[in-house]
Length: 525
Ligand code: SF4
Image (cartoon, rainbow, N blue to C red; front, side, top):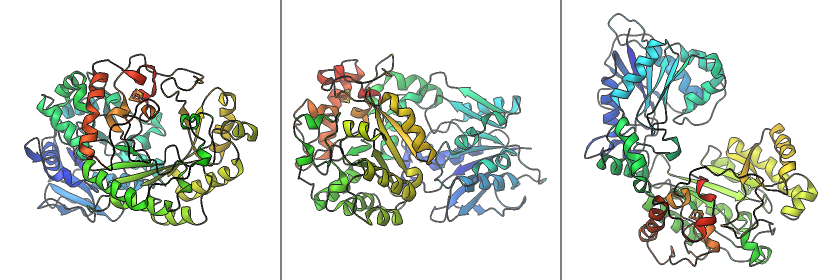
């Protein structure tokens, strides 16, 4: 009997193969961690065709076999969650021992983990072994420190739940598959001494941002799971690194004057007629990727993207900006639309190339009752509904229908939700935003946390207005005159200038419109 490490290196970022903390790379650290696991028999890497395998690594046979080294790889052309479960079944069947005895458990980890923790992995293993669990995981730690442990019988039991799951593999794919019928499995959980889930810290070398935060925390003394649980709550200022989310306004035109849009207080968006030039927008996206390393671009806050005469090119340009450095692509695009004004063929053409998850859609509809829709948004419900069905058909799980929850539609929301859920559409209920007290408070309920924390938008977002100006946050567009412009200043200096307000939040000070704003707890990307 013994244990196997299964390490996912599919589409690993090149950052995972570079030195980190002035020493070995994350991949080297993860491979070493694997070899130190209790009763370790061998390691199986899950890889794509384009992923470079470490020297001396052999391909696994798919049949029980004791021949070969301790490091083997299972390589596929295309991975999804069903393939992941099948691969774990193959790994479980692979024998590394001299007696061909099968392994007892699989320790599953991603190969970009910068500080995989041997000690906490042992704690997890003891728990798993003592209670003869099928699945054991840790809760409350930052990502990238501890594995998920599976009994070797579990992948076969998960297969029926994984069938047809064609989405890409993410860190919590296994838990998401198991969660569909969680009571059917023996699950054990190890809780972190400090619950850090809210901080969304990932000690991984998958993005420039995560690696930078990991390096800063390491320099402050966060060198393993235990010390990180102490260091992170004491060092909030270290958690702001490169921005991740870039809402870029590409037009000031909207076919509707939406009742809760603060921009409509000053000008009628139906009379807007300015558009960001395509070449300007695309070169901005490229600069953003060069600066931040990866990005989610959102088109277009306070403006209808469908109205831009070159919208398809803009979306393609933003996606291509993240493909320049080779695999894996580092940009994604979120299109936020009313669903009104999409020209024939544009959505179909985009879906032909980008239906796999890099292109996401939110259509805000707010109501499916015609009279209520007209009161909140104006004319166009019929066209919006047709677009919603089209987007759902073309983009599947990467399409969301949204309703902003407010007093006007509160009673209608359940009908709205059920109607679209019956059609298989995912519905997001979004929080109403008063824009720091500028709009009347129409929130049916206050869902803000009991204890305030630094604003997510200061930590992760860089909004860009049509003229290139950069407000401190989307809410602050209504309050401050931005001093910075992406077309005349460097992104580095603009982002650095936001540090002061973020530091005030870390200190528990909320100046200006921040004081009356409750958007701080909403998280984009
Ligand atoms: S708290 Fe509100 S106003 Fe302040 S930065 Fe965050 S979103 Fe903007």
